[in-house]
Amino acid sequence: MINKEPEKIKTMFNKIAQNYDLLNNIISFFTHYQVKKIAVKSLNIIPNSKVLDLCCGTGDLGRIAKKLTSSCEVTGVDFSKNMTNIAAKKNPNIQYLEQDATNLNFENNSFDYILMGFGLRNIQNRKSALKEVFRVLKKDGVFLHLDFGAKNFLNKIYDNIISVLTRIFFKNKESYLYLLKSKNEFPAPDKLVEEFKDIGFKVKTIKYCCFNLISFQICTKN
Image 1 (cartoon, rainbow, N blue to C red):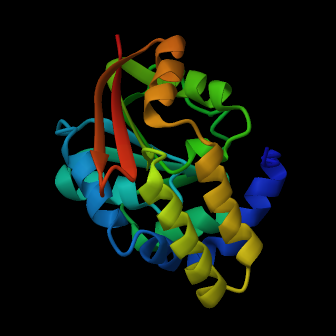
Image 2: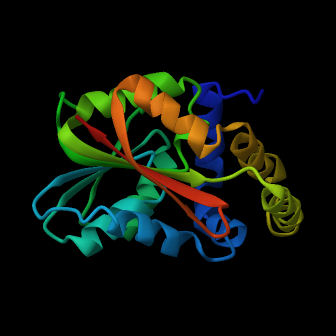
């Protein structure tokens, strides 16, 4: 099992923040932004709604939500200060806060939509984070979760290619290889949605993209 002690993970993401967008482009073969756009677009975000981009990284999901529904109010949260600093520069019309996803500083029932991409698998206490998502989401609110998908033979081929690319392009190899290891320890989507249900979410949609390598799930709080 990977050590996901929060301070260690925070330190790692602060170190790689400057190269994070480049990393995402390389490991997704420049497809990650389009997949994120497909996922967020499928929500049909209502005008003037409140959106939380949780574990926002450099802010892609929140930026897409704001572009698609300009009147929505987006808040981005990440525990990496370096990530939120970059996100704020890229998206000056979005508020960014440094917070822990397992202990959010928001009132109950605060958001209409919560977006979470490639973040849940880096949290040591996944259940606590999901409980916080459920708590701050409004009744009938929507939770979008996006991460890697099926663990099939293509997944193994992908890992081998990415291991080579990260060794070529990045000096901090250990941090980037951690991202692959965390992906492989993370539950497959069909297992993950059972955790969502245990918290109280109703799973509405499970979709796969890029030959099933990426998946997003849409849940509601009923």
